[in-house]
Image 1: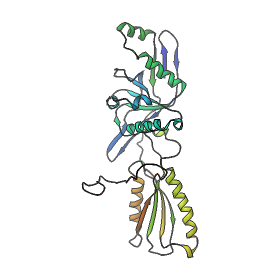
Image 2 (image 1 turned 60 degrees about the vertical axis):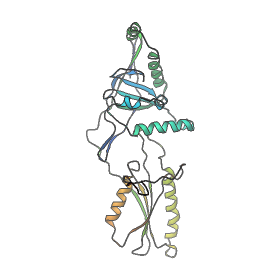
Image 3 (image 1 turned 90 degrees about the vertical axis):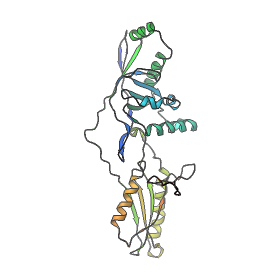
Image 4 (image 1 turned 135 degrees about the horizontal axis):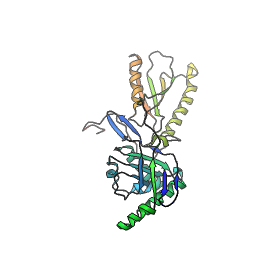
Amino acid sequence: VSGSQQLGDKVELEFQAFRLQQYELNGNIIGSKTFRVQYEAVSLSSKALRRCVVASWRDLTGYTNLDDLLANSVGALLVIIPSDLDALSPTDKTLFSELEHRLATVRTEMAVYVTHASPDASAILSDVQSSSATTKSATQQLFNSIAANTFQFTSTGSPSSNPLTYKPKNIIGRLSSSERSAPTIAFVAHYDSHAAFPGAAVGADSNGSGIVVLLELLAIFRKLYEKPATRPPFNLVFVWTAAGKYNYQGARQFIEDFQSDNSDDHHLELAICIEALGGAGPLKMHASKQPADGSAAG
């Protein structure tokens, strides 16, 4: 960030920002197509075309024109998010989650970034908001262009020269029955985390409870399989799947591999999905395809 007061000294600041995701899934381009930023900082109320809108996440939760803003083909958006999400109240966590979900599904030509709240970021936001808080006359606008603080945002990142080809990597554990043609029971849970801004996705993933339960089940059943006398007539497979947030692509890959690698003597009797057991709310069903009209899932 290059900040300057036209009648004073120029000051340069640098802080880390995380770009909105960009990926292709089933032929659909999702996210932000642009990474480059070189615009003057403005507030949400600004009508300038070539601009970098700086806003607090709270301002965006109630902003009704967000879709119109992201529909612009030129410009950038920088969202200041809390440095500690755990400190938010339950109500604020819900609002933040709704905003993230909204941003996770957008398609925009703009460069969209988030940065954690800091004294410098908060000072820039306050200055930008105060400079556009009131309607100014032509004389006031001319005076501000000479004497007021201005901030120019410039990105230093660069796009990858090689497209990223991602293949889900599943982690598989097995407990085998002594019977050759024993059926198989699979316990499945996804292990990866995901966020609208992948660089900011740290800590426990959204299915931490499922991962813990899967490990505990493996430890319990292992004791039964250690001795032939207590070994059940089933093969047990414990699968930690990747790409859970991308329509469960890892689970789909496991099913395809299992079907191709196993003969008719080995079949999958039951699959138990262990997903978000620690979460609240109603039971949800995942459908890999759009349910047909009139079906039980439709």
